[in-house]
Image 1 (cartoon, rainbow, N blue to C red):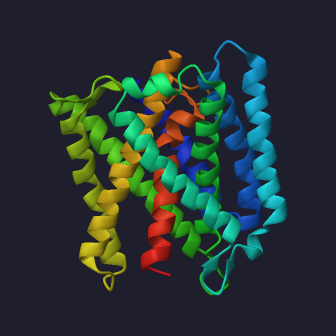
Image 2 (cartoon, rainbow, N blue to C red):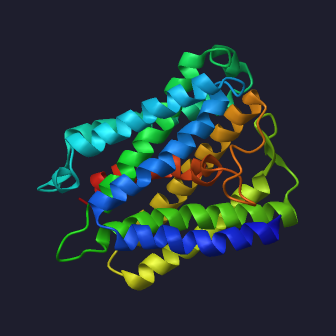
Length: 285
């Protein structure tokens, strides 16, 4: 399994970074649509894994919303005088609120599942709240690129990805080596408190990198934001685990050998990206 994960990562990471840094924001936004459509199809199994009509209906809904966003808010209109377009800002704010609610659902699971596990409407709404704000945050950060600094937005997206990847990797290996105390056994039996701590410690490597490249940044703020985003990413991971557990699904898909589906790869990012975007607007704009 580990060997297959590494092989997939070897070709996947350059592909992702190439899109983040080399594609103009407009093309980047359209390139993301099929990726999110695959994720939407996978979420459709969470809604009802037996009904193809339900799965495709949800996928088409997500596709229509993403295409509408790309058409009605072109990439060159995302930012104006340091302010994010109100439609995108509203979507990201709603997304951040959703993750606060999702955190409550996770920590109160399985009792909380009584509210939504039999409702296609709720699970469809949760899927939209998970995917659409993530898409909006990705495009918003990427759109911060300018002629003077064409890679700035890409660097921000990359930093969030690095925090999430380092946290996931540190948690995986720390959990394997030291994991004893279950974090939330009802949600994800494999995750441990030792793994979470290992992931948070590993995320500090990103802080070191940021301070080396940009020493004018306030160290305390960078540490606080990194740790907070790392914790938020863990909520995204646990949230998807909760929904898959109720749906009796191990992996969201098989498109990425060793990793599962698209949702399995972006679950942490779906939470981290909207929250980071709001923090960036609040403290760095």
